[in-house]
Length: 154
Image 1 (cartoon, rainbow, N blue to C red):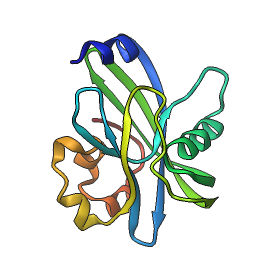
Image 2: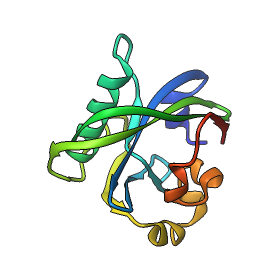
Image 3: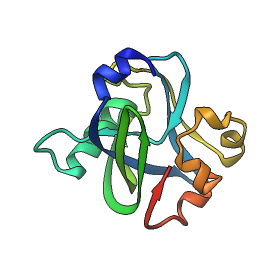
Image 4: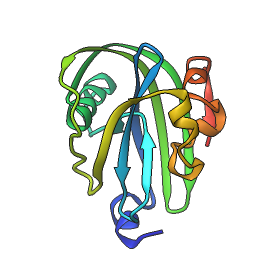
């Protein structure tokens, strides 16, 4: 694990909010070029700041990363990721787009956003598994994310 990742996130619990935003049958994904120079495709989201509600945190993350404004948050499922030195609790919400323009935004936590786009199941299947968020090992496809409920270890 890269020393910088350990310095930023290591040895502490991180609470993240993530949003499932659809354009017909395509899911919005963000491609992060992480600190260790690999691609990482995931639904938009990020860490909740101290004193920030989950809703405000998710709205902030969407705007920062994608330029899209969201509303109608509905809890979908949760997951936990533990791989020393990282430990994250992730809460996924179904969201509706209410405004904004789709852009490749920014991630203030030292990751560069390479791309932001609505992606079909077929396109997701062509992304190497190690470059996809771990929830795709559970759901197997974007459309199956809508079938998940409960809590998963990824």
